[in-house]
Image (cartoon, rainbow, N blue to C red):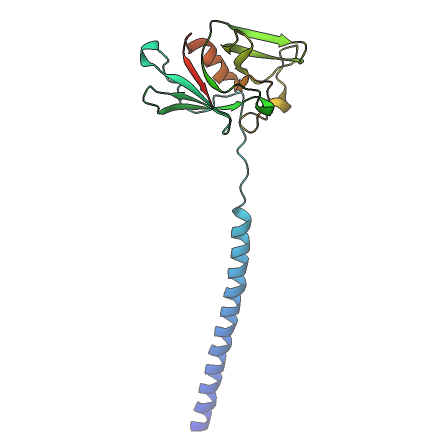
Length: 193
């Protein structure tokens, strides 16, 4: 009987050891699989910018002259910031500035010239909701470009917020350009860095 108990005990220990080894190797395989999955899910994709919608999902700030708000254009970030007089960012817009540094750097002011649509036959591009900030109609804030029929050029519009792609003007999402055209007053400071 003692011999039978010893054999049973040894068999029981062997089964437990076998199960333990099997489980730990399954855990390692499981763990490796989990690491691979985690690495795959960490890949980031660039955010798609919808140039038909406002850049932010909040109301545009008031631009009443007494508030002394101004526009800051970042060539590096391809963004336009609506700034408070205390230099706080109130609103951020995606932009596309001039290729080959063709957007002039410096401090300017919104000028009187503005309109709903233009088309430049020489560059074969137009835009909507344009607002002049330098040289009275030469350098503008405006929408992403259109063709001569006023239809947006999607390949150009898709560059918004990603790369400098204009001839020197500052391209914006449609609602952002419309807001500047309708609500940013004459004389508002524009700083381009």
